[in-house]
Image 1 (cartoon, rainbow over the protein chains, first blue to last red):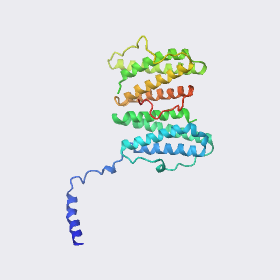
Image 2: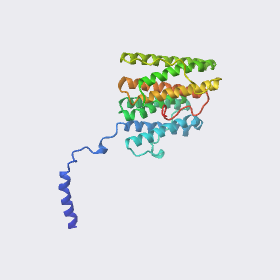
Image 3: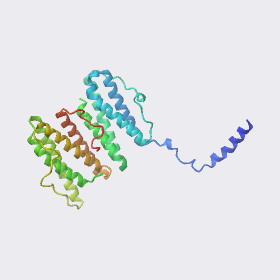
Image 4: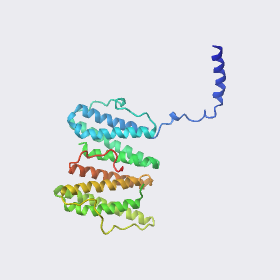
Length: 147
Length: 138
């Protein structure tokens, strides 16, 4: 008991003198790509929900879903975020209405996602530009099949 | 990594390839090939203007290009169209790390348009899947 108290007293001043205390915590500054990763997980969840509600769309949407999952895994790796597992993705709302309305909602989401990825590509340092450019281009191609 | 001069060389080659491609296509596919060729010409012209404006002397097109395989029918024409767009996408993608600002926006548009056309040609050729996770990535 006494020993523990002494230790606590001894450690406290050291922490106060820590040269790095004024440095920002690494976790306090999220990677600028964090919103894009979140949006990518959302796109994957939307496609997953659409396939669950309308299995007849599986042939069309599965390659797109897999692309989003791969993008999410690579963005997580790049930004040092925990690799998201499919089960950990947020459950998307049940697709509204019918097949037509579901596809229309997916198209809108892909268009917004394409723009987000394009903006991220244009703002990125050189070493991230190619990956982000391909993600943006992939979303443009999704509009050709999500219909 | 590539430069805008490499992108110009890719656009020259794409324009050349759409000649034999268009000759073997029918109906709606011909219209799509003409529109793709026009898009490549317009990218080529913009690149020539841009490079000339910077004081460079843009390389002209080669008199002829060796096609990766013979184009003998509609199926091989569609396959070549996919191949040409994939190659063009790869060159534009390679320009992304070497450019900034409006030049990077140009490269991204070049990559995106080529990727979309490659997907359309895959659909026309009934190749599945019509999309790839990372367009332009080797």
